[in-house]
Length: 363
Image 1: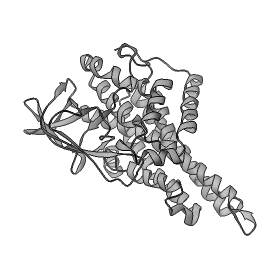
Image 2: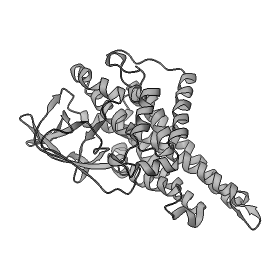
Image 3: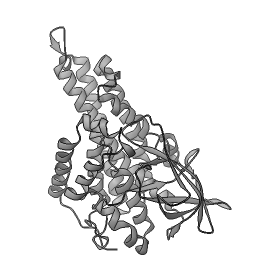
């Protein structure tokens, strides 16, 4: 594969602003809530716009596979912006996990077959991985070219066109392989799951003796994808926490009590200052993890785990404090701050809980 193109700081800022502008115009609160009630629970028109006008899904795809030839660091910008609006588009499931799984495998034949359609947004990819206990072991096994079992918590699984499946072997569950399956193939059953966070669709995907195409990959493919997932998830958490803080500042600056705006009370100023410090520390931690991932540093896995722990805990802390500062309206369905609180809780459970990641760091 070709070497990813180096993007200047000015170009990165312009990219982020372009994404932000589309989301401002096309993904306000009403649009987000409406999309969660549609079939597939994603905003397909918005996804098409992000792919065709900006090329969000193509950012990390090498040029030889019809991509933009940038890196996952540029995709992280999109993830952060989408995390700030909670827009229900498959940027994480397809542009991060599916594309990232193919890139991590390093199989040129699979890349040529899969990446062009994923880069254009013509197809949506989904990663099947977790078993019933979670991400400690795959829920699907592969034997003689057939997949059987059930993958839980598949992001945007009910909208996917192709599944990338991390599978174990019946004789050695710790040996992981990567497979490609048409999401509409016979024997594949997709069941939408009820969710705490309505802005992120999850599904259960069951495979009943389904023929699959094996993608050549290293034995540690699952750990590589976990590192990718935790690092990129931290970018989403930064975007969400920053927006939760902005909503809180906006509300307390407009709401009055005893003839004064809430934001003028010293105790509330201190609380929001603490929230700001948490958000900026999250930003630094996330940036370090993503840089280590992109540059291939030896400590990338440890930094990704640290980012997952720190950003998960502080996203929950920031949104929890935001709920308190909003008062009674903060716990109503009508106000958006509750959506960020739910996303924070849900994100902390993805790809392994923070205490699992902490064990990896300290060991």
